[in-house]
Length: 107
Image 1 (cartoon, rainbow, N blue to C red):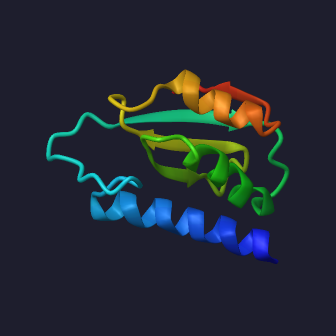
Image 2 (cartoon, helix red, strand yellow; image 1 turned 45 degrees about the vertical axis):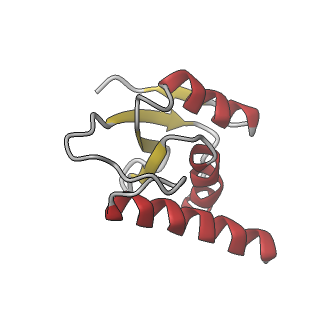
Image 3 (cartoon, one colour; image 1 turned 90 degrees about the vertical axis):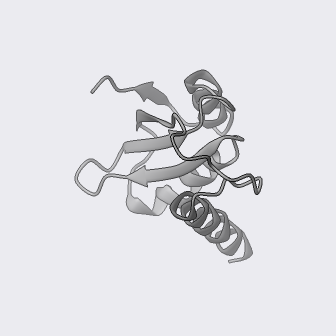
């Protein structure tokens, strides 16, 4: 239960920082920031119960501001990130280090 609570807090912090315009590290996102989205298919996601673990994987990368999940496509994850702080390869590597199988989607 403690692990679940920690994961929930990490996800909540990630969502709150993105919506308030602040990064996880406390820096403020400047107006006109060039944020990018990375759409991924995480094939190791089998149900919505996996989303907290996946969110923690992405949220562990500095520069990741938000993680979004698709109710209709359960394995689709969209990561909002600051390209000045991270890149798609680093985000994908964070997933792979935790044992997830990830494919970048071109949409």
